[in-house]
Image 1 (cartoon, rainbow, N blue to C red):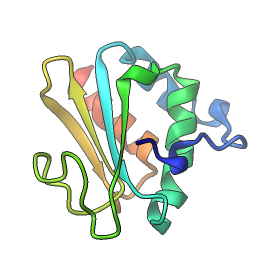
Image 2: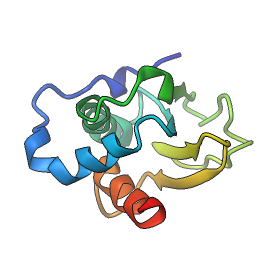
Image 3: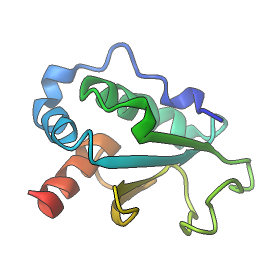
Image 4: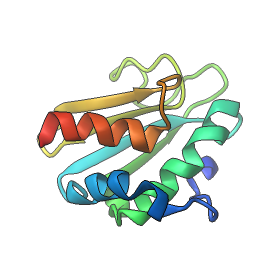
Length: 124
């Protein structure tokens, strides 16, 4: 099931986030983004549309983005396996299925920026 909240924000300004988009684009064919959220969740509605726009700007292929809807009890596919407690949570995996990094609900930066910084530190 896809998340309506992952629909890219049309007003998101990719040029203002050039470094973020460049980092996401540099790894677009080697990483998978597993996104747990709920369209009912205010944090998801606030954070995920811009993240969707960043992935779109970076031309991350759709098959590299796995949107996972959880119910209002935060139950859904992969929740136990990936120890999902808060939403949105974005787990970034390499092609071997190893977790590279994750964004959890209240990081100090927006998801795309935070993940790009983590990926740069881990993979560059």
